[in-house]
Amino acid sequence: MNTDIENLFKDKVIGHPAGLFVIFFTEMWERFSFYGMKILLVLFLTAPYLSDNPGWEWSRENALALIGTYSSLLYLTPIVGGWLADKITGYKWAVIIGCFIMMLGHAFMVFETQWSLYVGLALLVIGTGFFKPNMTSMISEMYKGKESKKDGAYTIYYMGVNAGAFFGMMLCGYLASNLGWSYGFGLAGIFMLGGLVQFWLAKDLFGQIGERPSKIHEVELPQNLNEESPKEHTRDDDGEKLNPFTMVDKLLIALSALGGLLYLFNDPLSKIENINLLPFSIGTMDGSNVTVLVALFMFLFLIITRISRYSKIVRDRIIAVSIFGIFTVFFFAAFEQSLGSMTLFARDYTDRVLMGSSGTLFKVIDTILTIVPLAIITWVLYMLFKKTYKKIPTSNIVLGFTFVFLWCIVFYKVYNEFSKDTTEVDPTWFGILNSFFIITLAPLFSKWWESKYNPSVAMKYGIGLILLGLGFGILVFGTMGIPQGAKTASVSMIFLILAYLFHTMGELCISPVGLSYLSKLVPGRMIGFMFGIWYLAIAIGQKAAGTMGGMIDKITEEHSLSTFFLIFTLVPAGIGVISMLLNPILKKLMHGVR
Image: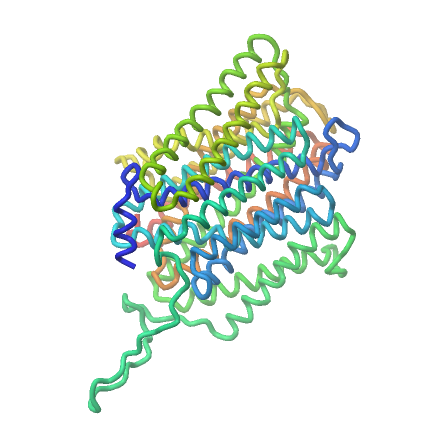
């Protein structure tokens, strides 16, 4: 293994092994396809039958119920996929399996039928489960013994994530709006295929890194008759008493997981297909709500009883992590409106038609936003070719063809837009703002965290949640003139752009911070379990985002669109204030961890 790592570091690109950039481009194409498809989903499902680009004309509630369940499952299957990779497939093959399954999922989406939609989404969920946790695991394994360079590696990887999301939402959305939904879904699948083939052909570059786990175990035996056999360990490396899962713990995990999954599937099934998996009620609560509340109660009981069995310091730190997990649920319940209700707002309530000089200015800015990042990434591709053209020539050829195809689509977009007299901004275009603001603002926030003004984690959460609330507050102000029950309006684009700016600043205060502090606060042996809990918190937030976003029509009809966004203003901001007020208590619970 050490030899493989040293070999990887012989061929460097921008100071990092070439293998990192193979992973960079694989992740970029996967995120391209993932976000390109996801931003189309709510628009396709809710688009009218009788239109230039007909969709399925689902209600917003039904569409967001399905998207909420889909998004939630995307954060649950990686828990299983990571375990399977650790025990059976290895990271490298898990990535290949995930790419292949996701490619099939995108292929099914092209047919635009109900059965193919469900099959496609199911395959995307399963494929993401294999792919998502194991790309980062490969990077971690590549940098064993070179921890000082790991932060830089993850930064480069994160840029690949955002580059893929940026181009995926921009180009899949553009083709879907101008040529048809199948073109958008199909483009996502083509680049997923490119990522799969490229990684497959380059897999030998990594040697044994990420291969299947060895089934050969070394057993320590007594060297003579007087030496005692090894005893079972009852404490970890830090002297902390172990806390194995009891049968009751395992039963609670199984039952709460079953209840949660029943709720996730029953919500869209009962609304869309009129199939109720939980046909009962208790008082005024239907079966879905009863089931999810019972599951949540069992899960909380599990967490509380397990925490109580730890020593004081470990117990306090896990309580702190749990509180941050609750804040994370609230954050994602509001933040994930970006690919749900905010995308609908961009389509139905935003004035996206630009005339004259404003239209020309937008075309120029949009062209710069597209060409400059793509040129920079193409230069990185050229640097990779120079270092690896002898080792992985076929992978480089495939990667080169995918970039030629990408440039062709970009030139088609630019030429097509400049040939028009008027400019209509696609509703999917606003989705790229999050990735653009992350790329431009991340260095600034990184400098802030490294300065003497670096706030505590509770203050970062508070700032992030308040910024998120302020973003929605801008939308409240922008929609105040829209009458009650209105289905369309013409709000200035500036309100949506500013909302994405504040939301991204909030994300930079929370998303990179949560997992970092989790790894610092919990004992090493618990990292895997707590990462699973963290993904569960995000999954709950994703489903809550779909459920709350689905209320947009009801709240707009009974009150106003401003009232709908006001909920997302007050709740995150209020939770942010609570986080700040809890700062002294949380500092004590963390016992010196910064």
